[in-house]
Length: 630
Image 1 (cartoon, rainbow, N blue to C red):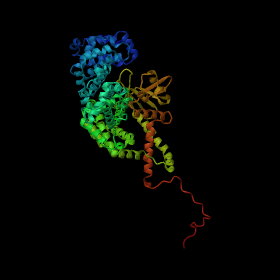
Image 2 (image 1 turned 90 degrees about the vertical axis):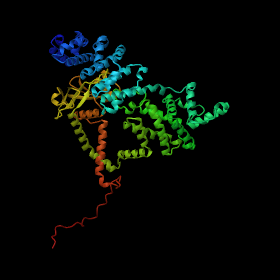
Image 3 (image 1 turned 135 degrees about the vertical axis):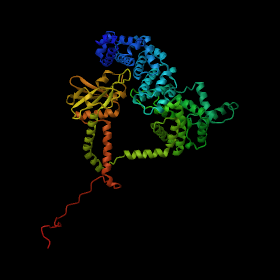
Image 4 (image 1 turned 180 degrees about the horizontal axis):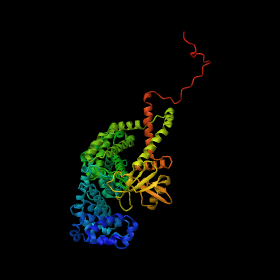
């Protein structure tokens, strides 16, 4: 708190150094409480509000940008503790922060922390959201998304997501794929945090389809009945229905709905009562029929001319395909706090679900013919189509055209080849002699995995401090000493890759570690009970030492979680139990077994050992070496 009079000092050099020191110590909650109790945070607000008047005084001694960076960083650290409310900030302060974002970049660090502050304001209250939305235009955020600095891109994306998630449904439906297209296609490797925001944006946008997916067709709705009849009329060129009698018209409609692939041809709306996919299946069919009328007519008429058992039912296939796409795109699922698996194609294509449906329904017809399927094979065909779509999307196509080319190249014969290859890799010889050999090899391979885990702990890992309120950029590093006796850890900067062990100030003797806790048993998971989702719980682990002391971790990935929990188990003299260890052990065993059995290729291995013959009646047949040859 002794920094407060120095911050007020007119000497800019002293002020610059003091603000830099303040930014460092503000992470301590005890200091923050005392500093804020003396209205220290209001001094920082005053510096920001009077920034224009101060610049000409400060620039001579210390760059004004550096002073402003330290001021904003200290303010952000103080506010992160949640001691005072964001809503007490003046409109002048908000305009100043927004001004740092709206102006041309004079200092990247100022813009980064300013974007952070605005994001926190938006997430804090609706009134602040309205002020920030008024001050920071979408065009300015788009400009920040187009810069080459990935940190600025990420911060701008975080603010954009906060604005979109806080806004109402009507405001949220912006053409985000246009805003972010350049990030996906021109910025190369997307960083983990940016990938997370792209994943969230994709999930939030696709989830707008959930109400239609959860709503069954209303058989009493004239509008929905008209859409179904529009599908029928678009597929078949029929004579004027007005000139037909009621019974004749009803019979004709039932016949055509049957050709269209509805199981309940007299009341086709019953096929769309099941949710999901509900009305979304009707929407996709209607979109296909209107957007690609020639392909739609060709699909229906081609199958109408086949034998009944070989006919691919359009309506039934469309309903099931829509459900498959909803499951693959995870429509209706809440975005994970740590998820980052987004589809680049989403940001290059408007109405992604409908366009994917139009490609995949034609693919389904093609696969049906390749499999020479009948009605009894409907489930098998849908499994193959699901696999074709999943495998193609996993290759991360960046455009609909690229997806279309790849998914059509992955025909039924290719799927069979891939399945056969994967099956051969997964198959294991189950002959008793081979199983016995495996058991003999296990101890040696387990020791190899143990050494690898310990070596990985000696290399260390960067961990991110995650707050329940927003994603943090604070990082810390932990590593095991080469002699396996100490765990060293400490805070590090974002650009640090592998800090030397000497720079990590804190350490815990391995001998003092009492236990290893995971998931819900971790102290930091108990403190935030109800706020953490399953993904975070699966990555959480802690070690306890001394009396009620613990070191808490959130692993960057599931692989890191397995490596660290296995390594700590080895240090504690316990057995490794992670799924990663089991997978690696199986791979090593499989490789070792194949090497040992190379000479036995195409030689059948018996289940039982050969029978040992009876001993001879005498042993007089042996050669007598005692006699010297003459």
